[in-house]
Image (cartoon, rainbow, N blue to C red; front, top):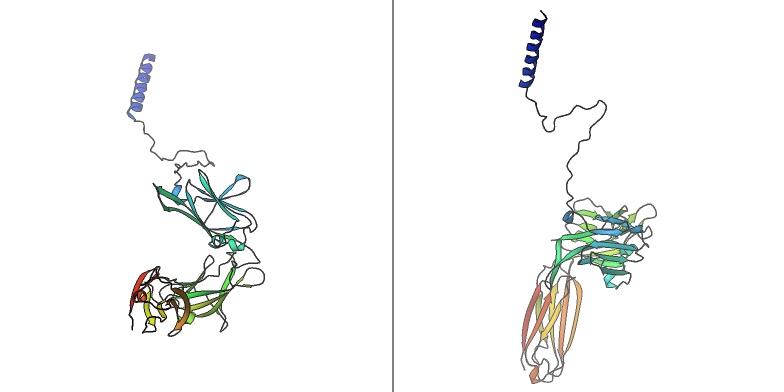
Length: 366
């Protein structure tokens, strides 16, 4: 009997072992939730992404106290009177800053280049130093160098001064030209980006609202007239307020211009029309053009390098048509006591940033 029981137990044990062997072990799928203790959360670890760096990040930084650095954004607010030190990474760096610092050859500004970075230092900055500061990498191929446009970093820096909400100007009256084919800017820039600024006309006294479409406001530039017209002409000014008494900007004279951009339109005439030996001759070269575009005159004449002449150049603004403003530029050549060598072809070359125009007139003896 005992033998029979032992035999049954042995057979049962064999069956159980065979069944366990037939069940394959299942591997856990990737990402399968694991059993975790109740009340505890497991942290999911994501793979670290490499820092893009380079093109997407600014290399323009401000040096703070105790060797700390601050990477500058599109706009930065600083305290006037406290020395500013900016750095830009690179072994060959170019800089840009408010133009008046160059105009007045300001000794407060210095730039130094080291092996790894360039350094711009401005001592005792004031509200007048508010503006865009930028740096860029200079790439050279042999002796030819150029700006790397993929690595330009700009920050508009405000030196906030509650006594000077507008960026101070060396002049008290500025002309703004209005053209129908491009926006015009009334450049009342502020030193505090939080200041509330409005645009006003002097006569008749009224506010010109910034509606976000035809008139917009940018604290780094001023008020932008998107589609200037004759109705915008006149004397304007800006008003700014933060917490105290409102402050008023300088005045801006807006003049409407309807002169096409291009090479100079030139006319040439002689006076008197009839000359003889011993007479005095005036040859006048006249250009009608855009008010703020300078004209460079050059003369070629028969007695050049042999006879003395006097040349006088001038320009003035005139109103033409319905309030349109035009610049008349003139160069007058005077030849005294005409001699035989002075008769012949007189040539005037007028050049502007758009091109050059050449006109001639033949002076013959009567």
